[in-house]
Figure 1 (cartoon, rainbow, N blue to C red):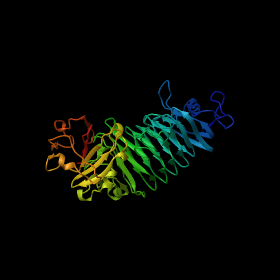
Figure 2: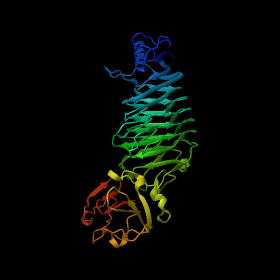
Figure 3: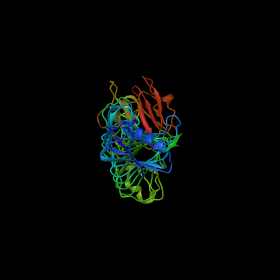
Figure 4: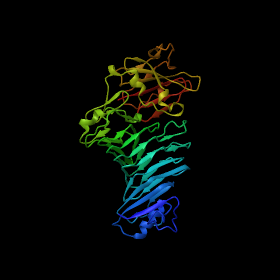
Amino acid sequence: MDSIYVSESGDDTTGDGLSVSTAVKTISGAVAKINEKNDSSFNWKIKVNGTISGPQKIIKDVATYTDPIAASITLEGMDSGKISATGISDSALTIEVGIPVTLKNITITSSGTCIYGVGMNVQNNANVTLSDGVKVTGNRYTGPSVPSGIGIYVEDSKLTVTGTAEITNNTFSNTSISNSRGGGIYAAGNSQIVVSGSSKITGNSASQGDGVCLSAKESGTSSLEIRDNAQVQDVYLNSNNRDYVPYLKADEAFTATGIVVKMNSALYKTGIQILQGEATGSVYDRFSVPGVYDLSAEGTLSKKDDANITLADISAMPFVNAGSFSDPDSFEPIDVLDKLIIFKIPSGSSYIYKGLKVSELFTATTFTPASFTNYSDGLAYTIDSPAGINLTTNGPYLDISSDRPTSGASFIDFDGGYFYIGGTGLGYMILE
């Protein structure tokens, strides 16, 4: 394996990269030297001496859009090798090549406004492995928009985190952002995330998936597989369409337990498959789904019996709506009445908002205003509609426009069964 050396004190023009003293300055400069060799059978090693400044890139040739001429590339740190950046609008390290790329003994840390991976961006069918001694840590998103993948953003690619690699302590500094996604990793498109060995994804923070956020839509579905002794703090399944569900994969047993799995409201339905693979039946109980659903031995969601649903279960549900109601913690369950869960929705306005959750379609289809008065906090919950609310039996997407309150009301149909009537009306969700 031939080596090219990179150093902050190097020079991409005059350096040949064959030693520390004649190092190039950037990883892009090292890739250029690899292409000069023009041998696709070589397994190249790019050695990073000390700390170099980001952004750094391993990408296709800009003019020809072809991969580096190599069989593989290993990016290895020496003398505490590190890629570090502050206040940049790009990822500290971008990898967009089709040949295998392995990182070893190197730290990636940055702060900036890149919404697609402050630390790393891996996409365009890349195949990247983080191995022993790799740390993607201390990355901070400082921008005003919604970030996807503060530590690492992955799109249409495979990322393997193995050995002693760590993705830790990646977060955002703008506390007004309520729907940041993937503190450690955000996976988009047809992406595969494999976490194995003694690696760990811990201590990260984001609104949707402190550890890993998996997305799915018509263009592709992402997955996460956990193996060996790897640790993953939690997983968030991000999709607003039940036809495209990101999933957990279990083809072999692993030791981790208590892995919390949360998801968009659209995915909460009995029978939705979120875990698949040959070992599903032996590892399903390693995952915990907060709220009113459990994970079955077949890897599907199943709703708890109504009698076993508690206010704590309701509090754990992802009540994520829009506008001033984007904070899941703003919903405060206050009472349980048979199959109804009553909760308050605080607001900056003078209105007292009301809500209820229907745990299943009722036998009766009409509830009068009297059904919602005088709950345990002493407030009177009433509906400004003499006819009450008509719940038809045509599934979670109900047309209630004819019975909605007339005072300042508006009707919004949220994916996954969320409905909200504004003004002094009623908000509720049906669980299937």
